[in-house]
Image 1 (cartoon, rainbow, N blue to C red):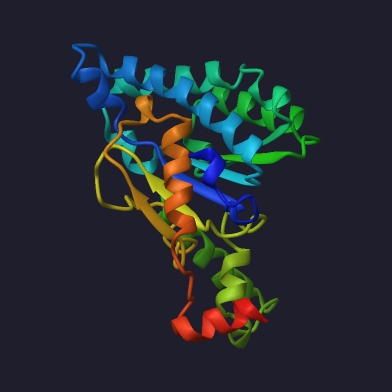
Image 2 (image 1 turned 180 degrees about the vertical axis):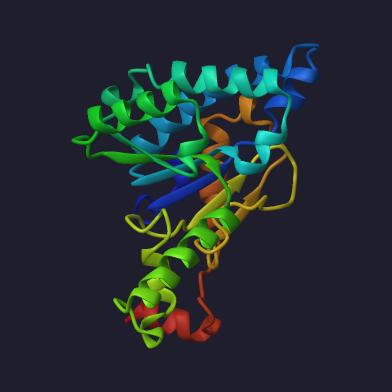
Length: 247
């Protein structure tokens, strides 16, 4: 299928909800942490393939603010996986810059230090930026942005009239990157789960039954091929979009 993709219409930014790790492990009679470990292997495959295809931003929903409600042993295992995955040479091998979004202050100090070290070590990489959403939720993000904007207005450094969609976007954790053109969710669930709610206003959504540990290059190609078959209208009519395309 990769040969059928239009190389000129590869999404610049792909966001993924990596779902199904726990169910994948349970169906195999394993601990849920086994599924999360298998999911790390999938991250390596998909990161390499996105870089090869020319994707510029890959944002991965790794751990939500709601996930803090999970059993302590699972959270501990997940934090350990975060640390081990950051040791991976995939960033330097694929010329990938690493970034993180979320309420990082809630993470263990050793994880925070490793995240910052990886950010610093990969800052000069230019092929693609991998963004990990860690201790993240969109409602948390929008709430924090609102607080910061309100403080600016209170201080007199911003007028109420200055607040518009562009201004709000500047105060989000994703201010340095474009909105995703394509959002993929694996694992068969049909919901967004508090992920990039502002940013995906006009994203194309793609849901698949495949659990994240089984998601491979061919599944990514299928998602992109489906995206390329859609017409992105942004509120315009089909005729308007076609007319603009031909100009």
